[in-house]
Image 1 (tube, chains in turn orange, purple, brown, green):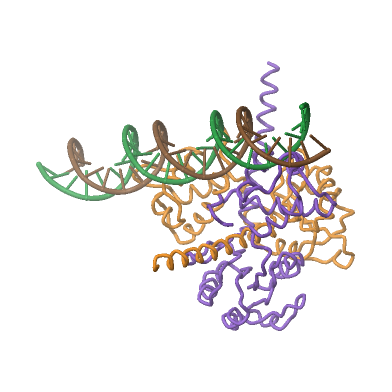
Image 2: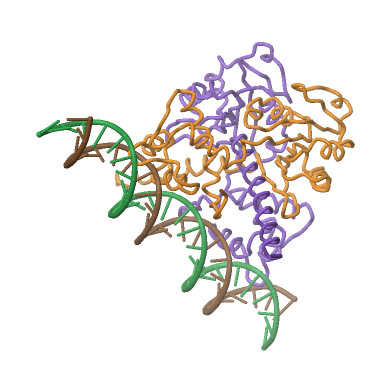
Length: 224
Length: 224
DNA sequence: ACATTATTTTATCACGCAGTTATAATGGTG
DNA sequence: CACCATTATAACTGCGTGATAAAATAATGT
């Protein structure tokens, strides 16, 4: 496994395949063809076949893909068959929203602890997870084999905390802070910049309106 | 403006340009060259030049780009110079996290109301925004010229609410529910699937580890 | 029950287009 | 007038799509 480089575009699509396959399993579907799946997911069947082929022949001619097998194989590829210990830095609404999302644990993401600087929050327990002082961060990361840190703190504090996490040996940062982080090459940063997402939405709304205006102009141009 | 089709990839990068330009403005920087910006943002200067050229000559030879001018122009392109009214459906932690993020309002996103089905939450006020019953959703959307709805509800409820929003005349859905939504062509859906983001992170962490194992193997192979 | 044919569906190949990077040409700056 | 940095153009890379070959399943007839 993990022989040749797999394109970024394919990896980005895998979680969506995984989600749909999970839903199919729940519905008791045992096998599915790329064509059926393409209808469901609204992507071309060709793309599905090519994507899945990156990881070796999961499918069988004349049969299709075995849903359960494919599901577990994708889990292996994504690494969600293993356990990942994570901590949440920032116990505000966003941090608590993540802590409260139970399904992460089904995927092997185990929230070991939460951290904050607000003394009023420290000591509280959210879904069995204690909120601790950031002073204890390094020690906790080392003691609990924490791989991943979710950063749900203001951008001003983010770079400093990121540095501390890196020095404590963290492998990946799930960054919700509205800033870019600079980390060594062997540390992964996955950005979730909500404000950027909202701006993209804004663009699409506006260009949609502009287009409809254009169409109206074209319509009235016809009538001349 | 809005003459020829601009590629999706360029639009996706614009918010990041916008953020960095904002930071430069705060630092009192008046002009910047594509080369300096490329160093700061860690993308190629060539890409920056080509991206910005999509929207007409913002730059000047021998001078660079005027930071403030570029900032306001990108704002126009993204449509964040106008006001967008939005509602949040789902007043849980995630919904409240969005409601509490003040900077959205600076970008013209005005949160008009929040909605939930939980009677205990209805009537509460978060940052001056009242939490209402979803029964009042349609009327509120129509009365308040709401364009955008943030969906921070469980996936089981999402499709039904999405339908209701569409019928009420919403223009865009910012979808945090872990499911795909089916809407008419003239309604924009921007997905924020956190679980998928976390899976991508997981993949990168694992492939990073595998690669370092490979390197060690290569190292030991050398020593034979 | 077996051989044969038709059907289904994947795997692989090849092409075209879009996105990215590099280079040449142009036009201000100082 | 030399230099700088953009604009415009060209080369390259990679992704997505469609077409074809191969392989298994399902159907048919003897």
